[in-house]
Every structure is written in C-alpha cells, then in structure tokens.
Length: 95
Image (cartoon, rainbow, N blue to C red):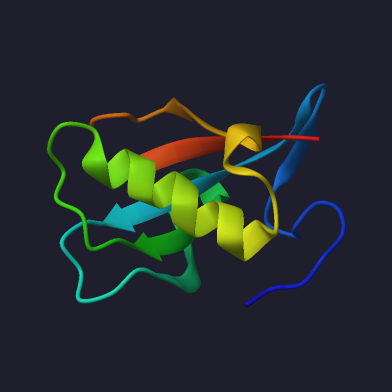
C-alpha cells in the first residue's frame, strides 16, 4: 500500500485535486491494487482488481472503495470522470 500525504507520482495535478488512469479487472478473486503499467500515449495506469461484476455499477462502486482505502481518502473525494462502462477509467481525487 502506498503512503503519501498529497498526490501520487503517477497522477496529474489539476484545479480541484489530481487525476489518474486505472485499468479495472472485475470479478477478480479479491479486491486489490496491482502494478503501475504503461499504456498508450505514454501514460501510466494503475491496475485495480475488484470482486464485483461489471453490472449495475457494482464494479465502479468497488473501484472507488478500493482506491479510497489505497489513497487514504474519503470515498466522497474520489470520482470516476470517464470510462464508466469501460475497463480503462479516469479517476479524479478532490483535495
């Protein structure tokens, strides 16, 4: 688990906090954070594994819960800003 007070090194700062990309694997054996991987266009993506299926927004809710624990932030401070129905999602963390 990462420990940091501010912004993780793989994130991009913006006017309301910071954002970063994740690649989600639903229906995993357990909820966990995986490795940081290279993606297209030179960006880094954090792998997130969740046990929930990609139905009825369940996997998205689980992603927010896993990231909240990983980042030591309240769930209300974490938002999915793009990719709601895709494996690759852009996450916004409000500070």
